[in-house]
Length: 102
Image (tube, one colour):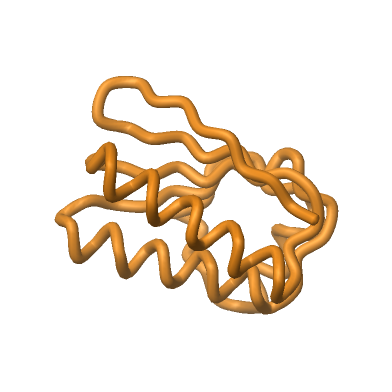
């Protein structure tokens, strides 16, 4: 099971993900993140992966869907603090390194 908690600073919404992101968890996270984005309308969404121990391709879908959503709202998405295993998944999916911060 995965969880997400939120903080904000200015026009940036931080989503701190934790746990394992598989198909079921990705669905739950998507709803939670999208609802919060709709309420707060940030200019930038930052997905923090420091608490994620496992992610499969469902996590890539979660990222790409949130990126499209933020672009549709005129904003941007950034990924921060991915563990090594998650970095490898992101590289395989060709998620741009400029979108990922340490």
